Image 1 (cartoon, rainbow, N blue to C red):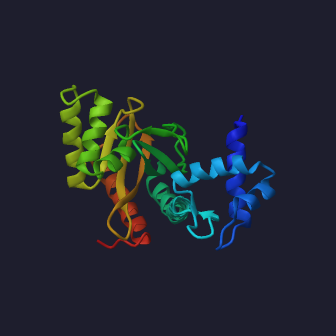
Image 2: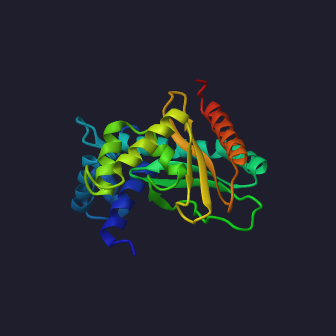
Image 3: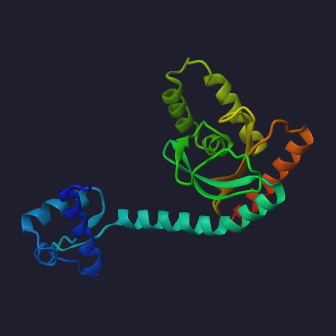
Amino acid sequence: MMSSALRKALEVLMALSAEGTREGLSIKQLAELTGFPPSTVHRFLQVFKEFGMVDQDEETKNYRLGPQLLRMGLQVRGLLDLREAALPVLKELTARTGEDSYLTVAQGKTGVFLERVEGPRPVKVIELVGKEMPLHRGAARKVLLSFMDDEFIRGYLREVEGGEEAPGRASLWEEIKKIRERGYAVTHGDYLDYGFGIAAPVRDFSGAVRASIGIIGVREQLTEEQLRHLVEEVKEAARKLSRKMGYYG
C-alpha cells in the first residue's frame, strides 16, 4: 500500500494542480485545502521544489506547479500521440506479414512495448505490452540501443557485460554497427529456438530515433526470400510512421 507520507505529499501536489492560479497558492491556503499542518505542507513543498515539480515566487512566496511536471506531461502526451499514430501502421504491417507487430520505446536502459497488434498465427513469442526488457535483447530493443550515442552504449555494455574485456562485448558492438549501417535489426533465437524478430527505427521531425517498429514470429524455417520480404515490409512501416512524426529524411 502507498505510505501515508507519500499519499499526503501527492494530495498537496494535486491540490496545487486543482486549485492553483497563475499567482500560486500559499502554504496557509494549501494547509486549508488539504487539512494538513502548515509545517507538513512546507516539508512536502521543499522536496517538490528540489525536484523542479513546484516553483516558489520570490516576492509573494506562493507556490505553483514547476517545469518538471510540464516536461513529464509533454513526454506522456508524446507517447500517447506516438501510440495513436502507430496503431494503423501496426495493423497494416500485421496484415501484410501475418506476424505480430510491435511499437517499442526506450526507458532508461530497457525497452518497453508500447503497442501490439496480434497476427493470425497460433504459435507466438509472448511479449507483454508494458513489460521492460534489456536493450540488448531482441531486434525491437537492439535498434533502439544501436541509435543511442556511443557514450551511452559503452556505459551500457560495460554494465551488462561486466567489464570492457567481457566475452561477447566485441560481437555486440559489431552487431550494433551493422544495425546502424543497414537501418534495421534481425535477431534469431533470442527467446525461442525458432523465434525471430525484425525491427527498424522510427524517427521524429528532428531525425532523432523515438521508437522502433517491427515484427516477432515463430518459424522453424525462414528462407532468404521470405526474410528479405519481411525486412522490406518492416522498413516501409518505419518510414510511414516516421513521416507521421514529421521526418522526411
